[in-house]
Length: 182
View 1 (cartoon, helix red, strand yellow):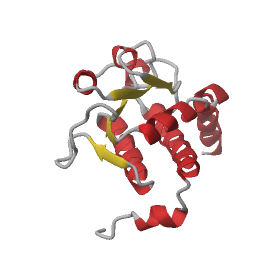
View 2 (cartoon, helix red, strand yellow):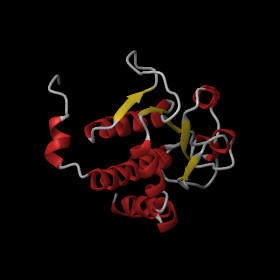
View 3 (cartoon, one colour):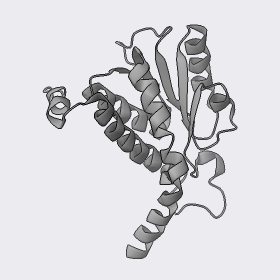
View 4 (cartoon, helix red, strand yellow):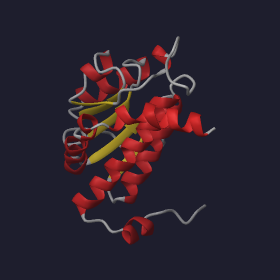
């Protein structure tokens, strides 16, 4: 297991390289400048986006998950944050078009920056990793798109740390926004 863990850590390193981490500042600026934030992804990418939306809420941002019954409409000054690891999902592309039509900005996390969804976004964060779109042959030791999804979580947590510092939010303030209905 140690050898597998070491190989996995080696696979994760490119996704946390300086050029990737340099995308945190522009994304933080977009998030802190947004009125409302709606997060979306499909499948396991969607789970990572839900985790990020929760942390954005804990930071005091007006963050929501697309598909929840309480998500408000987006418009000018708002931000749709999506994940499209393989570069395109029909549902994500449709949401991006709707948000842009309403005047909202779009930020996209992706492993395929040349895909249709990232190309339609205002801000793109390229996380170099295997996804379901390119999991055939010699690649990650993790199945399908797991490497991308793990990188999404790690990148998101570093983003949250940056946002916490930018916004001056204390750990106690974040904790106070955590639900008590668990």
